[in-house]
Each structure stands twice: as structure tokens, then as C-alpha cells.
Length: 318
Image 1 (cartoon, rainbow, N blue to C red):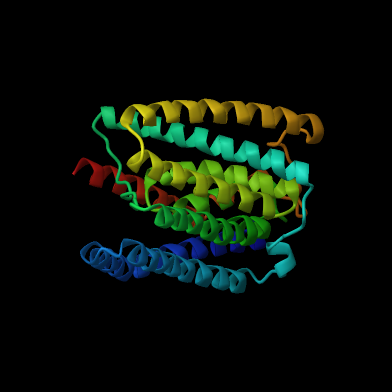
Image 2: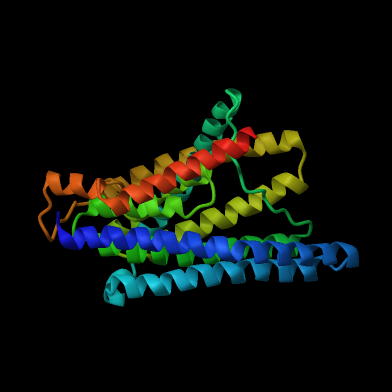
């Protein structure tokens, strides 16, 4: 097997382990501090001030986890920063159409995952999901949505579509897209999120390769997270159940139309948004690819996948 490719896959598995480890270590103290601050806010009736500190605490811990992970990943892969962090400025029309299509597909995929989880629920299999956090005043909702939009968009794109994707591209774009999306999925907290993250990870990776820049994927990631959080809070607090149903139907129909029209406009000018050349600077045979997917580091990643799946099933059933 190609030694450099094998070492790169090993490095990816190490980075995934680092992210999961950091998240596990910092989750408990953050959880207790966050709830302590929220309780003080409810007792003191200064909800926005305590919400502000709670939100800042959450994203400070997230920034520590992802910042340290990115720092260690750059030391592990040891590649030039211009290569692993491509911030070239793409064409405005390219960015507009590709981001519109990606965000629209994101909402459609989210609906598809919800339907899949519902079908599992009908046969008695329920997955553990993170409890959504809702805020009761508009400034807190906007601040939380802004942070949810900005921080993951920058940190996650730099790590997964930056360091991991770019470090594997010299061997094969296909391998780079698949492995970076799998790593992105594993670093989410539960199985349903992992399914969605894997699909979006593939789209974000293709978008990065097509544009030669992290900028479109960062923008798409931000818009999806920000708008999704705003819509979630609006649905929970400010409108009736019937209005929520109407809003969701209208939103998903709109997203479907946006996805189709943006894809057609993009294809007419730039070709299919999902096509990219599978460049290989170093020849890789089918045997080498087979050996890569049966290597110890890759098997360890699959074991983590199975663990996340079973954890979700067992906790959901119990």
C-alpha cells in the first residue's frame, strides 16, 4: 500500500479521535456551568444577560475544542498553510448559485433524515438526540443563531474541508471527499446527525474542490446553520402548530424549487455542480484502495461509526 496514503489515513483517524476526546472532556464542566448560569437567570429575571453568558460559555468551550484540534491537526499533517487553507476568491456568480443550491439541498436532506428517523421510530427503534436549546427573547435567539452560524462554519470547514480534504487530495479526490465526509460525520454527537453530516460533508467537499476555495462552503455552512436555528426557535415559541406545519411545507417546497433552479443555472454556465476531475498526482491501484479500506486506522473509524449507531439505538430503546 502507498505508505504516504496509509499515514494520511492514520492521521485522519488520530484527528477524529482528538476531536471526540476533547468534546468528551469539556462537555461535562460546560454542561454544569451552562445550566448553573441559566438557573441564575431564571431566578433573577435577567434572562438576556444570563443567556448571553451561557451562549458565550458554550461557544468558548466549542472554540477551545476545535481550535486545539485544528492546531494539532496542522502539526500532524505538516502541510503548507496555503494548501490546507485555500481562501482563493471565487467568482461571485459561482458562489451565489453554488451556495443557494447547497443550502437548499441541506434543508431537503434534513427532512429526509427526519423521515428516516420517523420510520425507525415506527418499528420501535429510537435514536438518542441532543435536546434542542430554545431561548425566550429575540436578542438571545439572534445571538445564539449568529454564533451557531459563525463558529462551526469557520472551524469545521477549516478542519474537514481544509486540513483533512486537502491533505488527501494528492492521492485521489474521490478518497479525499469520502474520508473527509466520514470524519465530519463521526465528529457529530449522534447517529441521525452523523447521517446528515456525512451527506453534507460530501457536498461541502465537492464545493470546495470545484471552487478551489473554502469560502463558498463556509458561507453555505453559515447560512444553513443560522437560518435553521432561527426557524427552529420561531417554530417553537412564536407560532401555532398549524402555522408550523404550513411554514414547513412552504419552506421545503421553496427549497426544492431553489435547488432545481440554482442547479440548472449553475450547470448552464459551469457544468454539473457534482462533477469534479478525480485528479491523482500519485498512481493508486484498486489493490491499494482495498488495502486502505482494510487498514487498522480505517477499521477503527468504522468501529466508531458502529459504536455511535448502537449507542443511539440502545439509549433510544431504553
